[in-house]
Length: 82
Image (cartoon, rainbow, N blue to C red; front, side, top):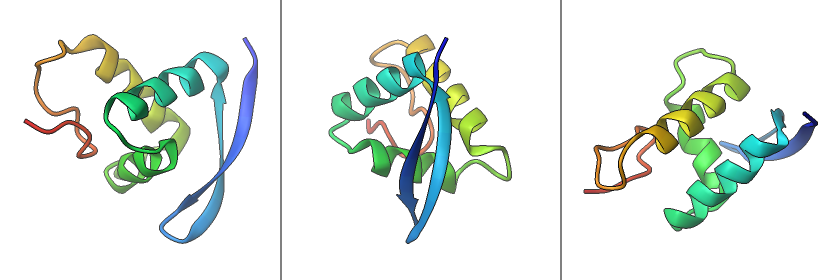
């Protein structure tokens, strides 16, 4: 599995995030479904990660998003409303 490093801006600071390609794809799908940019979604995940490694926090977020039903509770990161 290929790991891709991408540069993102979080809270005014540029940082690099390394994720396997399927996680980048899934993150893009989640962001689109929630009408957010990938960068905004990563920023929200970053704000709630409590010291956890950012790449790991993103992977856990993606897993949680795909495990819950479409009408389920908020997946944290302020990414689902209602």
